[in-house]
Amino acid sequence: MKNIVYFDLETQKSAAEAGGWSHINRMRMSVGVTYSTARGEYRIYAEKHVHELLAELQRADLVVGFNILRFDYEVLHAYTALDLRQLPTLDILVDLQAKVQHRVSLDAIAQATFGLEKTSDGMQALRWFKEGKLLEIAEYCCYDVKLTRLVHEFGARYGHIFYTDKLGRKIPVPVNWKI
Image (cartoon, rainbow, N blue to C red):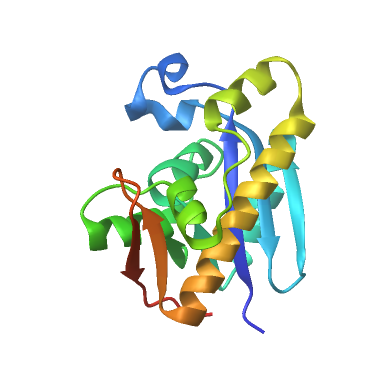
């Protein structure tokens, strides 16, 4: 069985606190979450276990995430000399952006495809980190991993996903994702 690892992380600092978007590697991971199809379970990683997270990503046949090439991997580059962009990766945001010529949010995809909404956002996760509420961050991050997995599985099965555009229209986007 192919081991697809769905992945997301949240950070300790905002872009402003890290010195701008050109310093994503200074944002530090607060919580990382994976779902492995080989194990059939989620794993939650605090920063002190980041090397276990990195090992899991390296063992994956495919890592799937949303904006992981430009964000999550860049955060993790603070913890490793490896270029994580070399891992077999499907970044759903990058794939869709190439097709529709603009950024599409995970929330817009989940709402249009499943009628589901994200439970929070990254700014709230930053506030939770400052309050020491790692469990809330983990729950939020797990839900984002679940949405990412559902979107990927739907696209792989049906050959398309949907997103809601700025006018509220449900727009189909063809995808060629394999499982």
